[in-house]
Amino acid sequence: MVGIVEEWWLRLLAGLIGSGLIAAAAYRSRSLALSGAWSAVVMGTGFAVLGEPVWFCLLIAFFVSSSFWSKWKRKHRAKATAEAKYEKTGRRDAGQVWANGGAGLLLCAANALWPDQGWLFAYIGVMAAVNADTWATEIGALSKTAPRSVTSGKPVAPGTSGGVTPLGSAAALAGAVFIGAVAALLLAAPQPAEAAAGTPGGGALAAAYIAAAAAAGLAGAFADSLLGATGQAMYRCRVCGSETERAAHCGSAAERVRGFAWLNNDRVNLLSSLFAGALAWGIGYVLL
Image (tube, rainbow, N blue to C red):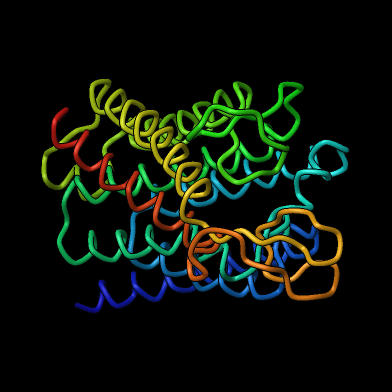
């Protein structure tokens, strides 16, 4: 009992220190807003306390890789034009942090209470989807090909919700596979809980993680685009006349032209990641 309490305190301390250092660096580099930084500390500590290293490391893999692409393309003119329509910018706030990682933290808690391989597969799917969507947004904004609506196939302006490009779709697949590959590398050797249960890692399991991440992540990214094109609230600025995800634009309230007022970008991300998590859980069940 004493050993368990000591391990819990060590995990808590390591989580606070590690998450705090990462969040501070992200805040200084303008990857996180202040609310996002505090949320990242809470979330990262939760993963460290409740889960094995793979849970925390996949979160870091998503954050570091997506921040890299955001930084690399931040000053590109095409991306700047597209971001003018987005509800949120590259500096993530608390809403974005929890929309991208909140479902994963719940899955981590569920696995701590009722250990099962399915929770990890679902988590891989969630993280693959949010990573795929972020890579598609950051890289796809630089496409020289005009985006097309995921519903009608007609060309739309850059930054339009539900617009997809071949470059963005390829980036989404790459982002999803990246998460699966990180999971496979981390789980190539048996984790402590698996070793105790006599369940070694292996090539088949690694391939299953990558396959689940690729399929669920890409499906989640397209679900995000579909929700963006149909149900997400979109507004028209009363001043400049542009269509935007923002309820206020040019310093005044914008007019909602379609979608549900409650379905903003963060909730679209959350719903699409939940769909991807359920799909990855099903894939894992079939493969294993």
